[in-house]
Image 1: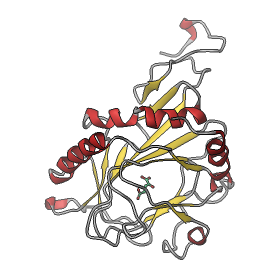
Image 2 (image 1 turned 135 degrees about the vertical axis):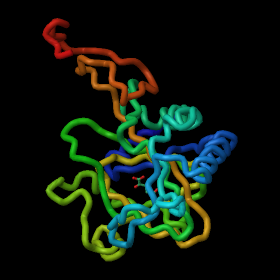
Image 3 (image 1 turned 60 degrees about the vertical axis):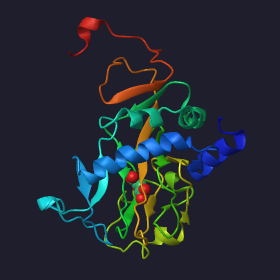
Image 4 (image 1 turned 180 degrees about the vertical axis):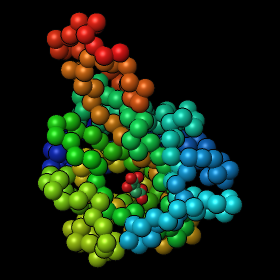
Length: 257
Ligand SMILES: O=C(O)CCC(=O)C(=O)O
């Protein structure tokens, strides 16, 4: 199911939208099983649960194998089930309305699972890098239900339009003391739910106050740039459509190797 016209307008205006459908339960259960294995066996690359209320990250949480896994990085290379979820029609149909028919998944941005173990610290407020023209969309796919109690994501509606003169990772204030907190709304999500937001939207997540993990995949997508001469980029996976070229190519011998 694609986004409706109203959804599309709200997405542009507010900077976020929930996809109208959830991923099939069988697929989410497979995501869960693979994720469990990678967390249990502490398969690197991992970000350890060491950040505090202020977003200060201390290093070395994984020393002696005693650390708690906060994030599994580089998931697309870990198991084919993650790419299967990333390119599921429920995800791509929702993205197509915003990005057009030719869609790429970026493997050098996000490409991780937030494990958010029981008791895990906040995710400090942040947004993506400044972009002048292209729309980059972050997609969160929920392996577990996300609630206010277990630290669901909060977004600041419309904040993707705030000037980048404001730091993209405001520092020095606790999560709830930051003015972004009272401007934000919590976004509880069901298991299998798919949340899309403009990567420039300020977002964060409160502490997980439960004993259980709250796991979600974080992925980045963009529309294929029809003026890009070079199509082959190992960090981009074409997940829908084709890589068309609409420009005036320079002769092959003038291109850098
Ligand atoms: O899922 C969360 O708690 C935070 C998601 C997020 O901001 C991220 O993965 O960059």
